[in-house]
Image (tube, rainbow, N blue to C red; front, side, top):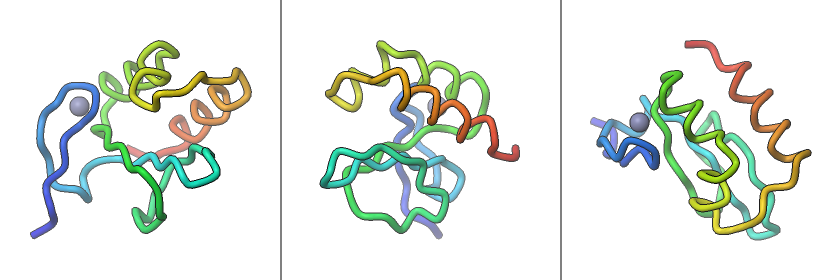
Length: 86
Ligand SMILES: [Zn+2]
């Protein structure tokens, strides 16, 4: 059994290993945490297009991360998300 986390987009609960984890570390760096072992404030998103696309909307991102999203970071995250195999 894996711990259960809530998707920050659709609010549905799922086992941690079935969700994607995004971490904001102490230095304010945002990254996709595929191994789910990085330190920092973690956010979870369902690994499905619906939630991923919505998560990547700039407005949503800056709201859940409580920070301004620079275009570079935004593009970086998009590429990382696109690289995830379903
Ligand atoms: Zn979801």
